[in-house]
Image 1 (spheres, rainbow, N blue to C red):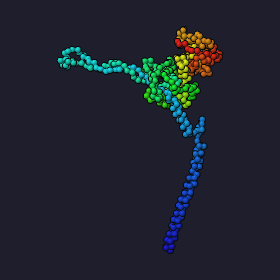
Image 2: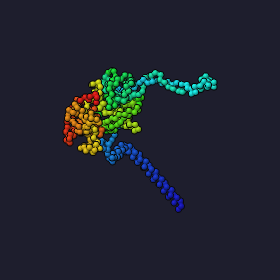
Image 3: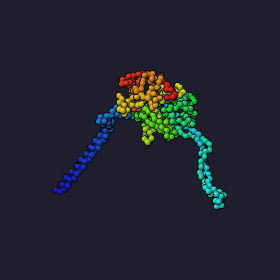
Image 4: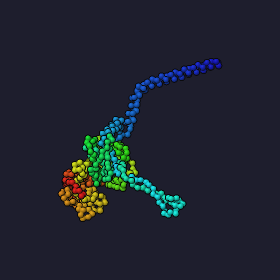
Length: 430
């Protein structure tokens, strides 16, 4: 009986072992078959997962919601193309000046002036050697630098006034191919930070002005210039961060100027970039780099191209900067001025006389006088542009040409009306 039980147990173990082996073999075969099937259909499976995720992903306003590799490459290619075409027209401006050569020497000084000390200290007595400095002639030395760019094939160059403001200095233009040219300063604007230079020669690569009035915040811009007066044709890329800014820009010598209607950008602008172009994605000049905000990060400013173009055009046509003028004195209307004087509007400019009796509100014989504008009129708009913060009357007039006819919306004795005024050349005493 005992032997039968042992035989039965032994047979059961063999049966179980066979069953386990059969199960393992079945699993292996199924896994191999499943792997083949999965490999064949893996793309469909992954596509199904991606499709599911895309259907449940949040939507993006203003587009397909995807940034493709093609989009990135296309914009990058455009920037590279603009830089390659624009760089030959961008120049570095080197400032040289006669500076004194300082020599150090020592002057002997005897505080006692008594020969008695010679017995103790020798023939030289008791003397001090005091270091002194004296000038020993002058030498030409590089004292600064900036940027600029050609605006014509015959050598006209735009830069900032503060780059070439020293009448005792000499200015040399370095082109991208390493050639040097002596530059003549033709004109410097007394109110805007713009100067026009000229070098002898022809066939220069040059840049064209774009329309700064059409700029939009977020638009891609490219700055090129002589960064830190050391790194020529440095390129930085950013966007238009703001428009119609008003700033007070100063230099290292304590001089400052108030600039209106400038463009704000986050494209890196450093000392030495002053006078260089700010370009759009098509390679047009939409600004001239002028200032950077100290103590801030990526806040730079550029003069709008439309203002600069009008100055350049006048120099090329007349040989000097001539401006159109309207012929009125005015004060910008604010909310506080409106309340204090019970005015009907809180924008525009109030035509008013100056501090003295000689400072008339409307200059006799001026375009404004001929158009019938009188003291206490309020000019609301010029060519459809509302005169409010960041859009001053003078900055808009500067962009116009002599002989242009502008439309003014004015408030005259409580009644709105639109008049046409033909701008004339500003007298030299204005």
